[in-house]
Amino acid sequence: SQKIEQNSEALNIQEGKTATLTCNYTNYSPAYLQWYRQDPGRGPVFLLLIRENEKEKRKERLKVTFDTTLKQSLFHITASQPADSATYLCALVRGDKIIFGKGTRLHILP
Amino acid sequence: DAGVIQSPRHEVTEMGQEVTLRCKPISGHNSLFWYRQTMMRGLELLIYFNNNVPIDDSGMPEDRFSAKMPNASFSTLKIQPSEPRDSAVYFCASRHGDRRTYEQYFGPGTRLTVT
Image (cartoon, rainbow over all chains, first blue to last red; front, side, top):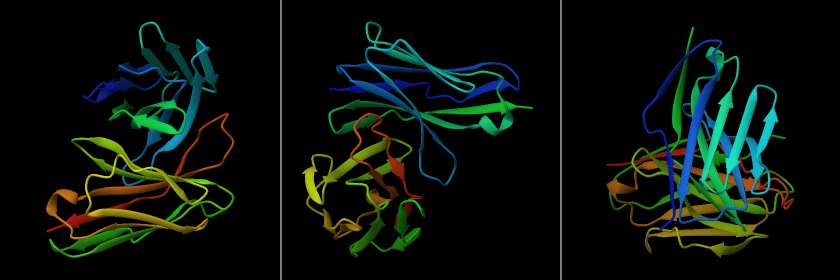
């Protein structure tokens, strides 16, 4: 069956450093991969989409890579700030269906 | 735009009672999704609609769950009868037909507690 794995444990990063989150998947061939941010008590908010034929996508301090051979996406936040603290979800898209990972909780320490 | 609107925000009910969750998608969006989120299972897709028509309900856990979308601006998710294991946060999301981003806009969720 399809499986998406994200770091289940929280990630603590010092302010100003680069935070790197991992999303691995098996038994799936997504056409797109998305990253969402979720704050406590709120719904997920879309951040970035990367297509299967793209290696890297950037948006301001965010960078996403997508390796379809390794079946892995890396999500980087450079110059991290306490306001970046949240849970980050990866999502695989094929056709109309989207499958979400459980998310990684990120804490940026001041 | 007010975004996706869900009601109620919190619902506490007793086992066996009927629960109805409501969603108003963003105007102009033609796809609507219902999700359930728990710590154990994460965010799970229950059902989605395109142009008010249910396309895939394979995520609906059992016959106690049903969803309707009578028009483009309203959808309901009903649980009858409710059970304690249904306790979760239920999200509604909508999406524009532009297939280039697949971006979904989520509502604030309904936190359901079944005692």
